[in-house]
Length: 337
Image: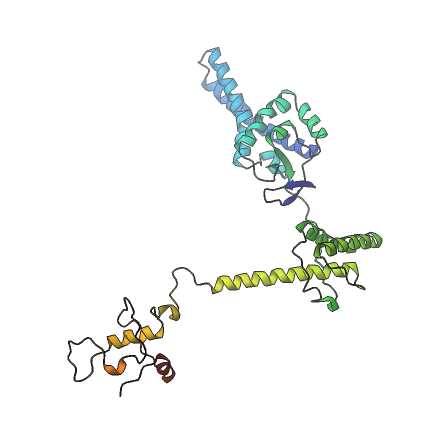
């Protein structure tokens, strides 16, 4: 495996391509490029037969550069590192951090490939691949790229075994904030593969991981608890906490009203609370019998008994009259006789 680390500090388990598969991919690419070069050359010779020798030489050099050098560069750039030969062999060119290559990576690989592959018949590339720990040629070293295998067998990964029932909820008060992600990954890998290990090796590994985990949490391993069961219980507690945290986050997100949603009934109450809403209704009520139509003052029965509250900009009809008796008592108003 190749320890490729991305910008987010994520380790990628990618298998570097070795010399046989890379040589086969390069051979297929060369066969395709030479076939295209021969076809283009025949067409150009027939179409430029009337030109002089210097013009034909210039056209031949331009054809060589464009087809045998520019062609592979364009193909790798457009396909993000998957040429015809690499596609047939299940290979891909990636950056050192595992990301897709760009034009500058393909340009450097193509220009150096002319020297170490075409001019030296691949001898320099083979030597560089043998010397490199990840099978990189000089073009990969200068471009900062790596050829990896895309078609890898899917390994069978077991599930994390649950802890014994008598350990459920026993570590609910454990502080897990200081445990690094690398230790969690090591514990999970051990739990999924502990049945494939030698019993003595698995026991020593479980004891070491349990001691590291107890040191990070600040609480020792309880007496009488096997190390493997302790690790499984702590991992289950961490998964339960993450599940609760994700559920609370989703619940809070769904409870938050979205932008543009209709306002709740509480938000429709004018400034000043129920007292101001009742005053607005009183001002909008029609005058009682015996009063002039031009009078804007509300009837005496609707005037508040306590200190008046001035509502700036109250809109007529913004709220309705309280319907229940309890609401009328709470506002401090006496209903009309």
